[in-house]
Length: 476
Ligand SMILES: Nc1nc2c(ncn2[C@@H]2O[C@H](COP(=O)(O)OP(=O)(O)OP(=O)(O)O)[C@@H](O)[C@H]2O)c(=O)[nH]1
Ligand SMILES: [Mg+2]
Image 1 (cartoon, rainbow, N blue to C red):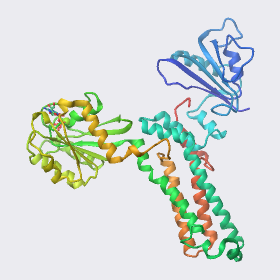
Image 2 (image 1 turned 180 degrees about the vertical axis):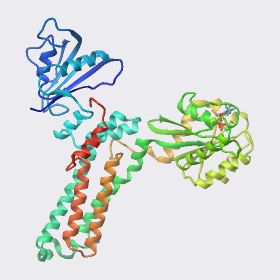
Image 3 (image 1 turned 90 degrees about the vertical axis):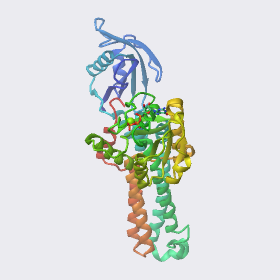
Image 4 (image 1 turned 90 degrees about the horizontal axis):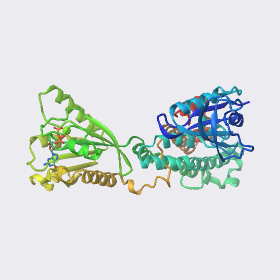
């Protein structure tokens, strides 16, 4: 008989409630063993309240807690097996004791679950495809509304459906290719003559493969948004010493994370923090003010600033608008011009102290930049958040993305498989065009079909499954 697996599914720590989850054929036996008030009949998906004992059949057995028992009958459960959820008080001690009571129940083949094993069972029992199982981890790990929406859509099966559609088309193409391999002389009558191999006929094999290729590439193009959802937009705050960089960083984080003083050169190292601003994940990097210096520590800090700027998705240049631009500003502007960054926001700060820097002179030096004027002291947090969220919205056009209604590739494994498919489809197309035997091209189309299948978990080996499910936490 299959094993019955058990784990604490809620997060460690104290909480209102906590859940011990069990999957496998022994669920009902475990209920009988633990429930002091064992109901006469157990209806699936009904909640039964009972005190929990290590051995309900023995009146002297210790009572651990009081809990709700919910039984879900195979195949109508998360794993596809019988599942039992014991919802107890969220005390580490109580939950561990309940889990231990389950493991010590003496019922055969009951053991601790491995990390991700519930979801692995769900996949193996056909409850979800592999891309859906991977989305479960993404939902658990989601750090922003954007990543959650993407994961939600993938978990609902949207990506899987798209991949299955593309594969169905490839199967049709493979069938047509097979006919032509078996009966090449019947080409003209069966398929419509030259059209079959022709380039410019959308209905020919090449045309059809091109359609599939473009579907694959459309998916691949979404990976840049996927990267933003996964890693966040890297926003690097740069500028000369004392301009107000750390003040901006703190305003965006909503806390006094970085030291702010009126001493130029306060920040000497890059400081990195993740935030979600209006649902968009952002990695903020505060930097050491750029200037020429003989100070050893500050020099290293400045080298790091340059590196950080090179890796930025968006650079925010902070200027002290109350003083004329000087050679220190010119040093920074020089760096930025060299970077040639297309995503650039210039914040002319310290507006409360007067206006010595004009927007025109900044625009003359950095024509591509979005330029705004503010006082972080006077307008503080709301202004800072507005500046950055507007800049991000305009530069990345995330407003037009409806993550729930489209596929967005966030997963490196999926991307690899799409790249394989793209390469094989490309190959197949050029082979047919250069008149190579159809058998060879057919093989490439097969490879593309298999690569796409791996995204949804078809023909993946144990090794891939282990890698995927090792990323899960215990109890999921
Ligand atoms: N009046 C005024 N002062 C500001 C404004 N923004 C920041 N400051 C002050 O300017 C000083 C420098 O601010 P920081 O945020 O430490 O500047 P920084 O660019 O991080 O400086 P370094 O870390 O030295 O490179 C502090 O005393 C801030 O309080 C502003 O809008 N108006
Ligand atoms: Mg600073």
